[in-house]
Length: 555
Image (cartoon, rainbow, N blue to C red; front, side):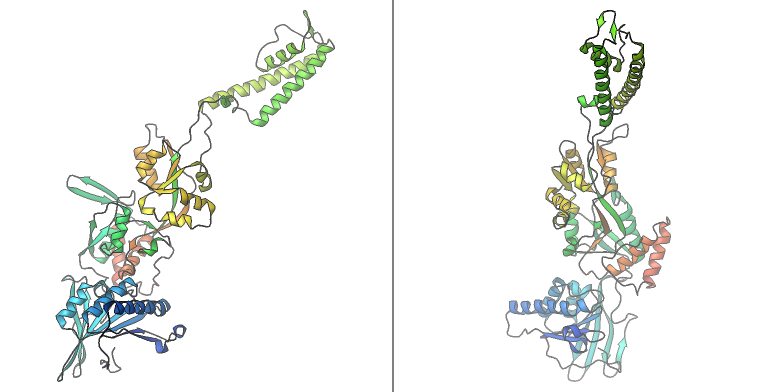
């Protein structure tokens, strides 16, 4: 609100009744607002409180729809000297998601300085976002305007600080090295922030020895690197479930959840997500099908085509020899062989039995009999060898490897509590297999559900690395085998990020750190990574980086 001469424009305004939303830049033709300025007024004098709140709610929604969503840089000016009005605005702007860090909020008021300081410190909208207050201290003899900002993290802790002042005689005078809208999150000055997380190997591991709790895992190391770059430490808030982890993020009790979270639309209704730093796929684990004793074990050594060929050859030889015996060309010293004896001799030789002295009296049949004997030796030897091999290494029944095969054989599918929102995601899918999976899907603990899978037709969906660790640690036998297996085909590709509150003003700084970490994954020197992150953050190497909350991961 500086004039061309560096002063303050003296507005003739009606205090406590108006909100002015100002867009920096060109005009907004799409919303019909000339010069890029839209003014909305909410009356408070002589009105019921509920009516005022309803009007304010409508104003915030209209401002967000018409200004913020069509402009990347917006300034919001609130003019009022009513603390109740300003408090209501702070609450509704937070609920209506009006402000992000790129949106500057300017509060113009005539409240007593101590009341204004308490107001700025008591609401997220004024204390955490990109907000500055102009306090008009005017009288008949003096006009003075003080510019105050709330710094949530400073060397002296959270405090309200006056950065500049203006009077008609001195003009605009800066009182600190800070700008009018200072950056608040490049340096947390050693502050301790609240973080929620649950152990989820190998991303976050927790070990307790006596009274000491230590952490490890990729998410933990990543959080430590971000903390070293932005100069903060963290406190783990207790959580009993993943729902409680994200609930504390949603109500802004937790700074963020340092826990991998798949990016799906249903989750964005409750919280935002940081830069996508990893990509994985969801797999299922279930019991390995086992073989059961069956007479078919004698059938498996040869293929179906081979059995048909052996049967055809046997019938051909039997019919030929029967015709020969009827012409008395094959007979023994006991006389002509009967049809049953011919069949018995043919099948017997195929099974490795001799002719028992029954030799044909016709020399011309020796070729036929010799060929049949040779055929019997070859087939019999091949069958016996294959039978021994199949009994030693039995043929395993087919096992599901894809989602289409999975939904056909199981009665129940479970997933961890952290992924309960996937049920709605699957049910809204265009794939019939995913919709059927959504109908079968339930929530359960990974160990309990894998134990249940040993006794019923069920499967559990999770991260393949986590499933492999749980199976090898709790279900592996001494010989290294396991009754459970992990499906070969991933159910879906999952982008991983960290949950943060809606429109959290510090998210861009977290994203800058995560971008650098994802680019330096091949470097094992953690100190080098931390120093590089800090250099990029404090030197603002990524100031021109277009911030995309849920962009793709460029590894």
